[in-house]
Amino acid sequence: MKLLSSTVVAALVVAGCGPDPVVLPTPPMQTEMAALVAAYDSPTGTFDTAKAEDTLMRAQARLNELQLDWVPDLVSELLARVDNRLEQSGLSDDPATLTDTDSDRPIINAYATVHRVCKGWVDNGGQPDEAANGSIDITAVVEDGYLNRDAWGTATNCHARMLPVGKAAFDGFLDGTVILHLEGALTQDVSQARFLFYLTGSMGVASKMASGSFDFRFIEGKIEYRLQQPDGGDIVIIVGVTTLGVRDRTGMYSCDLVTQTCVHSS
Amino acid sequence: MRKARVIALVLASALMVAAVEARAATPTTEDGLPLLDERTAYLIGAQQFKIGVLALEYGITKRVSIGSDPPAWAARAFLPILVPNLHLKTQFYDSERLTMMVNVAGYGANLAKDNLPATWLLSFPLSLFASVRVADRVWIHGDGTYIFARATGSGNVDVDRADVAGGAAARAAQLGTIVEWRLTRIFSLTATGRYQVYTGPLTFSASGMTDPYTSVDLAGQLSARVEHPWQALAGVAVLWKHFHLVAGGGYGYYFIPGMNIAVPKKSFIPDLSLAVIL
Image (cartoon, rainbow over all chains, first blue to last red; front, top):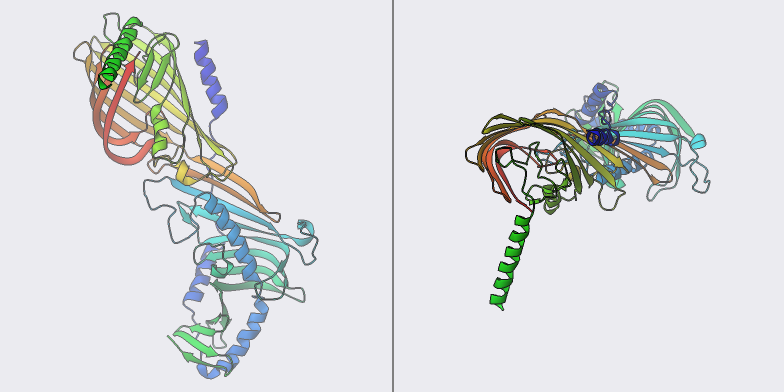
């Protein structure tokens, strides 16, 4: 009997009663993000090709406000870290697919949180200085084997120095709530990233800051952003390396930057 | 040369049989019936060694035995993990009608990918067995099992390893029973049932730096897709003096012997156990 009680007690001590179940965090502003995704997929505004020159001028002004030369690279780097973590655990990095299609497999719920100290605008020899340069936290959730399309977090006084390929260094600033809607699989290749970015807070570069809400979509190197039309509704401007396009409620337009004209393409 | 090999084989077999005969017999009832020692409260007996498909067992004393489960080792052939394990059985009550035994087992498995720091899944099934001789030729064997499971270490968990043949190696509570009807001295008909009354998740977490500026934390859990697996089997048990055979079949979810993890696929279940007791 003594041996019995000893072995039972030993097993209980070693094993314990098990930790509490993991409670997945819930993405914020889900309704608002769903509406934002719809605004990009099915814009409500109408593009008048007769006013293409005016529209393209306003599009350029909006582009300057959005600081899109460096933010996509910063976000893509963060998502690559999340991708790496999920991959190490054999978890799905693609919101379109189940971790494993075998329905006999267990239910997998998990979340990854990336904490990145921003590099700062002054080179300090590679030593992270969170107090001076701020940070960004991003959380991604895998629910029942699926990677949730919304990853989110907070940028706190983030002074980021980015060196986009083929461009000069940018000293950028982010502060506020960030939500990323994943439009495709996470990737280590910045140029292949697909996400919709939303920030409410402050964003800019050293010489120019702005506060409010900002959003854009990055699809494999192309940047899309919304442009409000004077007569109501939004259209979507699509900027590639050498191309410019417009999506409105009727379809797609291709534009010529030299002649400032656009034609309906689909 | 071939003739010599045959002679050697016959001699070796004869020596083994002689050695077996020289050992103490396995436990029997007062009226001389051999006892079923798999998934029941009965043990193999002092200084007995059992080599079987489902268990390796050594009787330290009449009431204490230790062993290991070959199915968990054999699983390495088709799973990406090795599952070393050990169990200790202690019979703490034995009367003419009722026998009770507790089985404490431990299983370990590294759930991390080969190139990452280890995360150990530790699983401790704790089982209480009771065998009741309800009539001269009828026994009811019952067990209650609680499986403690915990992931420790780096927290890196490869879900391909953690699912262990389709069933999450998670906390669980199970009830099992065998009704045994002895038709002759050594031959029984058996009816077996098992039901998982509680299923809990297996949680894991990991932290690490990917570069001097970036840290990534991961927290998650695996939960079995089937919350209450069950099985119903019918079969026979033949208890020769040194060879025990249990065979049968049924329907439901297969519980990996020893680990008692349910494979979450309902199907026909074969039941076969063959053991030599030396």
